[in-house]
Length: 350
Image 1 (cartoon, rainbow, N blue to C red):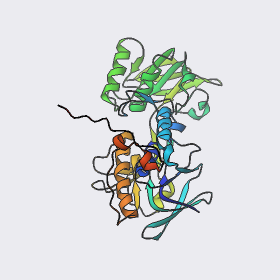
Image 2 (cartoon, rainbow, N blue to C red):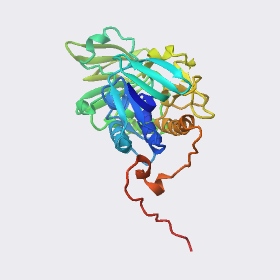
Image 3 (cartoon, rainbow, N blue to C red):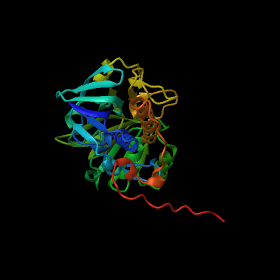
Image 4 (cartoon, rainbow, N blue to C red):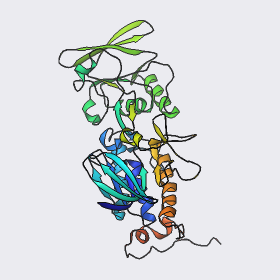
C-alpha cells in the first residue's frame, strides 16, 4: 500500500505542477499515469510541438516544457506509478481514499486530484475509404518526430491550433506543404492564423479552403491525395497526409465513480477550489469543466495552485497556512533541505 497526502491521477503538465505547489505546502504527492513516462500528451504525442502561451517562454517545445517541470519538482521527491490505469476509488473515511489500478497497485491518500487531461483518447479520423491501409505508410494522426518530414511533401488537414501550429513549424522543413480546411475560417489563435496567411502570401505554403480530402491513393505507401474544393477536384502528390482533427476523449473508469459529468468532463466548483461533488476529490486541467472554462496549460497551473491551498486546509484543518513567496525564500525552506536562505536584495528607494 502506497501512502501519500495527495494522489494525482495524470502526470501531464498540470499534474506535474501540482507537485510543486503541494511541495511548497509540505504535502507529499504520488502520481499515476497510464503512459510509460511522465508528461502526458506533451511527451507521448507531440514532444516536438511548439507551445507559445507559457509565461516567459515565447516558444517552447512540449517535451522541453515537461523536462523543465520535472526539474522544478525534483526537490520534492514525488513518486510515480506509470503504465497503469486507475480503475477503482473507495472512500474509507471522511479524509481517506484507497485507489486501485488495473495492475492491483493500491494508493491510500487524503486527497485525490484528477489531472487526466482529456482522459483516454484516440484521434478523430476523416471518413476516407481505405485510410487504414495507409496508417504508418504515409498517414500520421500524431506528430512525434517532426524531423521525418524534412524535405518531404506534406499535406495537413484541419482548422484548429494543432493544424496551424504544425503548419507553421514544418513550413521551413518540408519540401512542400499544403494546409486543407473545410471552412474559410480557422478555429485557432488569431496570431497563428495571421502567420499562416503570411506564409501563404509569401508562397512558402499552399492553403486550400473551403476544401476536403476526398480520397487517397498509393501502392504500398501513400502517393497522392485528392482535394475537393467547391466541386472541383485536384490531385496533389504527397509523402505524408496528416489529418489533425483533434482527439475523442473518454473518461473511462472515472465515469463510474459517482462524479458529476457534463459533456464528457468533470464538473467542479470553480468559485472556490475546483473540488468535485465528492469532498476531497478535485479535478484540474483539461478534464474539468465550469462556466468560462479554457483548456489551456496556463489555466491548469492556476487551478492546481488553488486546489493545493484547499487540500492543505482539508488535511490540516487546525493549522494556519502562511503564504510564503519563493522569490524571497527559494524552495529549500519548503523541501526540507538545510541550505541557507538567499539574502534579500531589496533596497530602499531614496
